[in-house]
Length: 82
Image 1 (cartoon, rainbow, N blue to C red):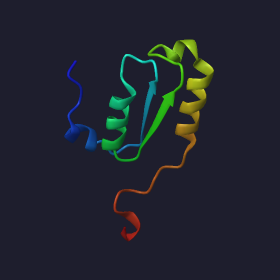
Image 2 (cartoon, helix red, strand yellow):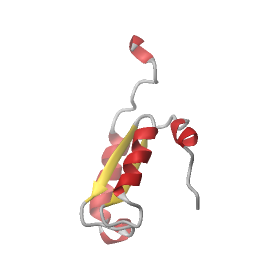
Image 3 (tube, rainbow, N blue to C red):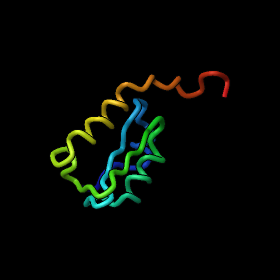
């Protein structure tokens, strides 16, 4: 799996949650890089968790996902004259 290009990540317009465990097979540095390229992204690094966190820590993962989904949508890029 080669992953997505920077251009592909930058083209994502929907809010996105990039979630990774600090003991994941995916390095936190890679998740930060993805987070920085996706407009309107949020980053969650789960301490002491690995790639199986949704199964081993469903309450923690579920709370993060619920909070992300409950957040109001950000204004469209360029809104408000900024």
